[in-house]
Length: 370
Ligand code: 5AD
Image (cartoon, rainbow, N blue to C red; front, top):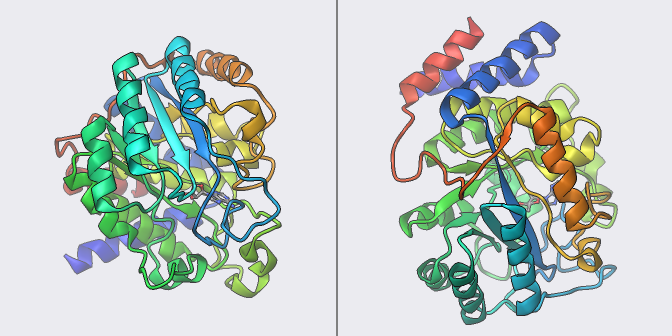
């Protein structure tokens, strides 16, 4: 077993360091074929509502970390959130994602009420992305009707994880455990990583990809790390970076390699082409993601006056647009790519089933490497 894992690990590392354009073309092609076969031509749209930028955490890479005093904090009111949900429904999206910093000002009962109201007024699926909340809160929200939860584990290298996620008092942050708990509560569960964190090696990233498979994730979101000048990580990046042949770069291509390998190894999962990818390569990033394994996009529905305040990294794609402009642009892009907009909720085809097995994933990887 260990031997097999080492074998896959080395294959994945080889792909992560691959630079030969025809070989990379093969990787993109295989990922696109698997995407087509397993989840089809539909691109599912998830309307993102950034409901609060308050955060108690100090993640050293993130612009809305608690210690960043330069940003003005906001928390959306219930009626503002409902208006965004109705907009999602009118635009024909199947899901809304309620995202925030880890904000305990978002009280569990209050949010449960919002979830119930959205569920009764629309047929939208609801995804939550609210950080490391308590078990009883997660259970309450699930019972209120929340369908999915997103929590990136960011990196599987524990030492690196701890270096960029200072503990909060005496609470130890264990996101892997929380992901398992989310699954047992019946959430469609999503996770993912940052690509190119200063201090992240190719081996770390390959282990992240193997962990996606081990956790049996229903959604996998990855994006390149983008330095935010008002964060400790950006200020101390040089001292954290590995020597250049070991350090993963935070590039469009590297993020796409992770998307492609995730698609090949976890074929039925939902994978977004992320905003970070569209930010690092404004012309082609989003399209690259969608043609190299991704099948989801997350148009931003946050009201314009809040958008620029949700600055987890600078120059976020679409941060000066309105929801209407983003909506039109993304739908045009889908048509340009010859794909179709998903109808319905776009649930993960692997929810509740074990639709991929390790042997066929390994066979696809072998086939590609041969
Ligand atoms: N660059 C890229 N992605 C970031 N995130 C947070 N800060 C940054 C950054 N500086 C990502 C994290 C988090 C998600 C909501 O946003 O991976 O899980």
